[in-house]
Image (cartoon, rainbow, N blue to C red; front, side):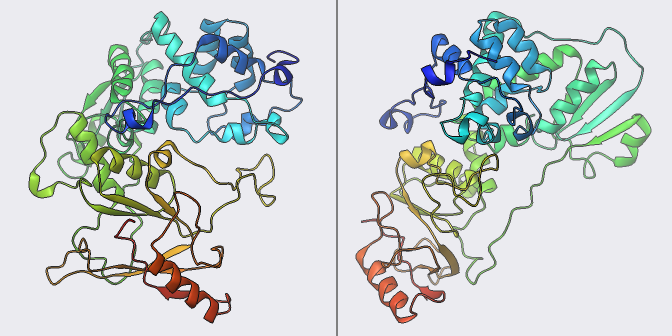
Length: 424
């Protein structure tokens, strides 16, 4: 697979990102185009592995070495066919998947892994540019009808496969637009919605019918669906967020990510929102509780709304810069990951557990006189907080944390009042 000596001749390479000063002022995708020569070089790095662990690392079991080899040899149309053999929507996964395939790449044992995710994205985009990805309506109809409830990636993939098998498929979506989490959960700068709309047009041409504002069990009767359809596919996502049960949680100005992110996506779609329900970071001091992908999505969205400051809290200690020995290859590695949103600014803090929130007499948490209260656990340095460049705290907080930590002899967690609403 690939070039026999490709992994020796070429190092891992990725497309450049637009300058931070540019991209925080728009909602376009942040990556620049990747030249074909470089994509083919990355395909050449794929080795002739005895057992390609990337197959099992990939949740959809993509046949990765095969299309890597086809890209290296310039057989793009064959690569498009091979990629779609296991993945209905590689243009989505090639943008937003965390790429566990790369974590399990055999080359990754002692070198940077093959840029699998970037190759995947370039294959499918080449397919659309060349006109190779076309509607594939069924040749014969079975006469059977299927209702798919939910229009996220799972529902859309099920609908496309069932339609191509000859069944009459109708997708029911409770929101006003099709796409589920792709539409309202993923920020525009990670996945422009024109990419979703492009695939939806293909599915409509194949015969899939979409019904929006259809909340099954509310304004669409379940019994009616059971009477009209031969089968029903339940593909609803999980919209119940993980709450933070601490005193002060009821204060105004505290929101779930999926209350914040969909609003901005609606603005990008041109929707006019009720000012009374607007959630905006503009000009505010923002704290994001949670250091994962969703937290990074909120961080990037905040940057584009121009806040006064942003702090992101993670309850776990700061991971190592390299793969931890506790998560050896081919496991998903425990290591520090810096997302593009982190490059754009803000402060990351580790080993921070929120214990309570306090507000003013009007029930607002967003008051400079009041605090988010937290505790600092094992994994922080003797100051109580990491001190590297973009992970700073004000001196008062560090001194308080230091004295608390020393008194406890570093053996247990202690409350500190993290004055993180003020950025210095």
